[in-house]
Length: 394
Ligand code: PMP
Ligand code: GLU
Image 1: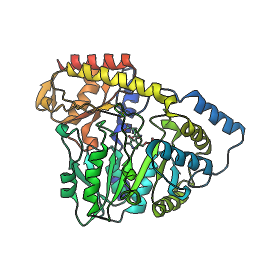
Image 2 (image 1 turned 90 degrees about the vertical axis):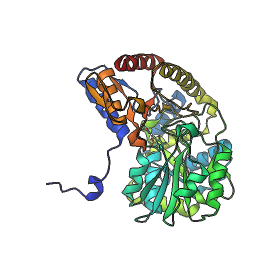
Image 3 (image 1 turned 60 degrees about the vertical axis):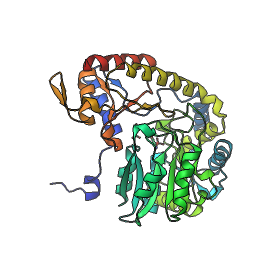
Image 4 (image 1 turned 45 degrees about the horizontal axis):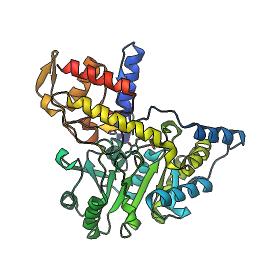
């Protein structure tokens, strides 16, 4: 008998992590899988950051940290927000967490009452909807189009708002579409929100530095949005530190205080060594990590070129992050190698079984027609993966 709670029974497994686990399993069986499913840089954490961690261990940083993070780290975050985002936050407005994922879970837990609606422009990052549901919120998916670069327009936002709308969550650069909202596009959304002063925004900026066009803009830069926006960021992506598990927020004091209280009961704060290392990471000039961004840019060019040679893949041109999100719906209804492909999940499984390439179905991101391909892999792996996909489909 299933004795588990409804809460966990109703929770979906993270599709990105599940696909990565499946790829690992198949590899252990001896299959030569190319993993393009996980959004994880394939670089090593830069040496200057690793050295800071080693030094912290040797200096005996081993005790509980303040629940919301070391003051020195919070100061480094404040400087980073000022330097990179033109945002002025004070110490009580910063909370350091065990990854941006926990920052998001904190926000949902402290902001949502049962039935509160959270608008999610689709495609959205895989965990948004389940994190919202876990806190008894109701995700409201707003479908966007490839023609509009997968971005939500002001009209769409306006149409999605109801008396129950509590928040809007989006990422820019976006996981999975790579889309970047311009200042003007964000202003148009903010203008709609002017009429709805009780709606709050989560601006997830974890891919901020992986932006090929430049011009990152934070919603909180608008004076009239600052008190209604939680800016989420972290070091997983730009600094190749996924396993170190450090994320953070800049937020209105009352929200930050609530997140602090929440994680005081949940984790007692983030890992002490990782926090010390992140002080060094954030104090460094972003030029020190540019070599990774440059390489992602090369890979983007490569994968877009290669995909354009496969019939039936329609992509937007991602401006940031390290994903392409092609529409593959022209394959739906077709039978290839005896396998019928009816949807994006079938397509992704087909690629895993017949091309030995792991991708993620768009359904995990609230989009039925696309699959997500991560190009956080070497150029050789990308070339080989797309060659295999082309062969499997031909
Ligand atoms: N937001 C987005 C858009 C992401 O892609 C990820 C993926 N890791 C996260 C948040 C969570 O990041 P972290 O590793 O800091 O928990
Ligand atoms: N954010 C990454 C991804 O989208 C890592 C996996 C996860 O945290 O779910 O693939």
